[in-house]
Amino acid sequence: MSLGSLVTFDKLDAAAQQLIREGLQARTFSYSPYSKFAVGSALRCADGSIRTGCNVENASFSASICAERCALTKAISEGQQDFHSISVVANSIDGRLTTPCGVCRQMLCEFGDFPVYVTDPGMKDVLVTTTHELLPYAFRKGSKNNFISDNAS
Image 1: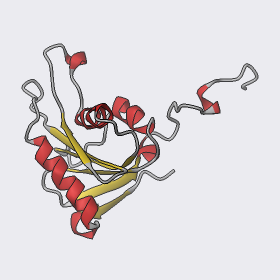
Image 2: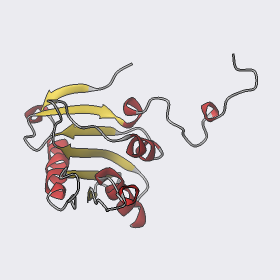
Image 3: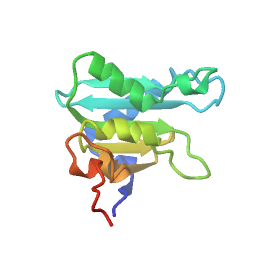
């Protein structure tokens, strides 16, 4: 099972580089007074437009929203439902890039399989993966795999 590939930023095409730069810019708007962990995201819609998002924390942690879901819900609330790619920019932890959380992975998979670019603010290395690689057995609409058969062994 593939989990994507690690490439240098300069090896990406101009559209992917732009998406990452927009995610980096969105990160500057993060409201993260509790964790101090700022995340930015940029979502390219099928029509070429880009919606950005940042994480927004709340004292009641369950009320917080991740950058990826912020960008996604912004796009949906503005009439978009077909997506081309998404970038996620967050600090690395112990030298590892920070990938979307499980809830974000599930939300993204709802709208198809498309490229995901994950990097940190230095933008040197980029994990290039897809929504389905990040969550290969996602609960998806219309999937027969959503239900367990009585005959399952």
